[in-house]
Length: 81
Image (cartoon, rainbow, N blue to C red; front, side, top):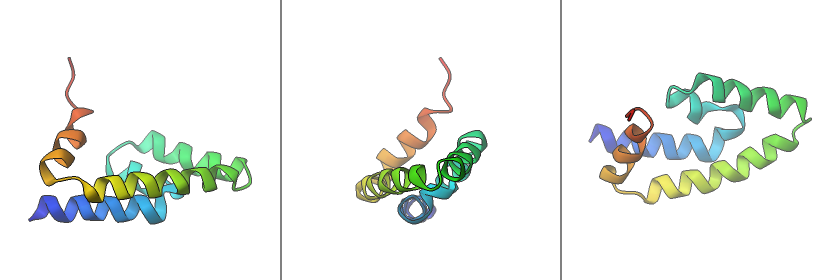
């Protein structure tokens, strides 16, 4: 049940708050989250629009995934070869 809630929370945060880097912070990618914020400010909001559209696409994709697909994708970044 926790995995489903995690997946749904991440999907909704991606849809609504991707321009502020919230999904990146949730995944532990602090550097990427800070870059989202900085680029959104430096570009006078243009990148915020781009990040918002990207977040909507990412959020819908995550919400349509099964829990197994989400967990495999979530932990794929942490596995080192």
